[in-house]
Length: 130
Picture 1: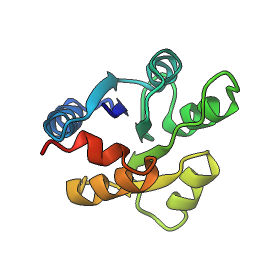
Picture 2: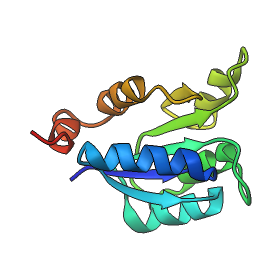
Picture 3: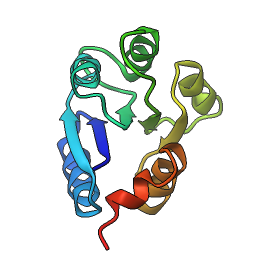
Picture 4: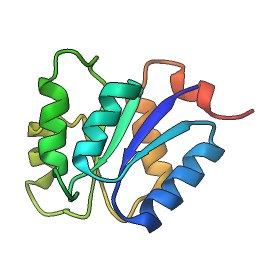
């Protein structure tokens, strides 16, 4: 089963996303701040990380850089989730080590396509119930 680490501090968003992702067959691990996200990434080795950029304790940019700098962790794809949709924000998230960028509000179909594109061939298909 494909494991997704969802790092999000707003309950409405993590509740909405985790329920929809679970219905699609993904295992969802929740973290509610950047440091918790880094710790859970180390402990659970997710297949992909959905990372809010405006988080308490440690922001998403720092969390992404921390995950990328930790050579003990395998490289996992990171999709930045952010309300920042200004010019240059996408580049800023990519420079921090994220592989893709998804502006809020979340377009679930688009997010699923982004997840599918970043997972190894066939991994997302395994998550979709038949």
